[in-house]
Image (cartoon, rainbow, N blue to C red; front, side, top):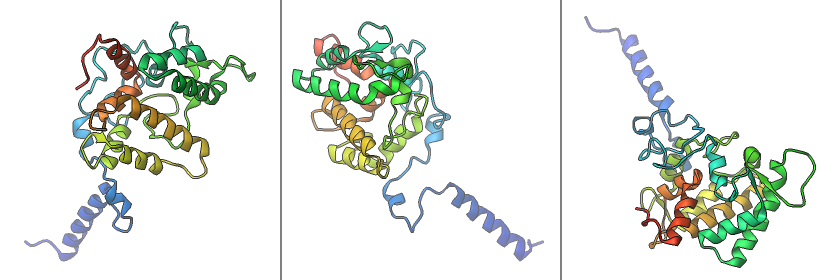
Length: 251
């Protein structure tokens, strides 16, 4: 017995509605087609949209950076901890300066980056309302220094959201998969800009510009692996060791 015409039409409508519910492209918004999303992400990385507190995984490193110790710190705290040379939980300007020097930046750029970072981040991380003339950055409160117009790879508590790293490269890495050119990096920071967020615009450009200088390869690409390891701070450890000649080049 053939199904009723109305029932067949209703079934077709449900199938179309199901497709629409999962669609990542709206034809009247061409930008949604230009910046494609990784539609099969769940099959490559379980619960990719769940923020991770201790590790920074991606589809190739599901358990985060091999050999990197999290020390029960959030991923954002791990990112900052490289500059805490004496491991007391507080980063002072002279420690940040030494950290940049260990990464290979010259004296002038290290001094400038240090002044900018501590002037911008110190007060928001202090445990009191009173400012400190030493401009310390307290790692325990580093989540308070999260700014707007960023990639969204950290949540407001400093956990890492793997999906946003994958989305970043899916949207903007057009020339080479899983690698960003400087132009693509610039477009990414422009696209993430929130209206009238002047501090966020400047901070994002500075952070990604410094990362590009630090981790670009010989062809001028910034790899997803380098970006991922920047988020958990293991990139800084690697770069400092490589500068000393104690580790091999990152693949």
